[in-house]
Image (cartoon, rainbow, N blue to C red; front, side, top):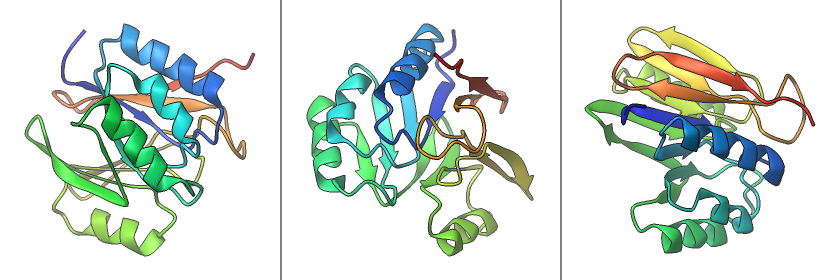
Length: 169
């Protein structure tokens, strides 16, 4: 277990059972920081993140974005919820955005300012480099099924990203 390991989830779309499975695995891996790349959709799902630090970016299906933000901040004042995130974690510059605004996503990627850009929205896993920027989409935990349900584990110390595929019930 390493403190440089972070979890990436996206597009929960109220599928609490998949969120619960993903968070159980992430906790076993020793992850304490989760990026949620949008479309959590239900503020009540914030309770599943208890004991974790969460950086949540608002998705196009997060109609209750204010309630989601409040629920996450009540749980942990260090949590973040907003349209997009830009910051430094363990010496790495990171941006996160849902990805439905493709121009904003492209701008973040092309800026060259970030070591990592995380996004969701497409429900398709992505792990690629554009120049010096590592782009990761963890796939989807719910909503339209374009491929198997998944999330990602990223080691910020090594840059190694691993997708975890959830088994269907």
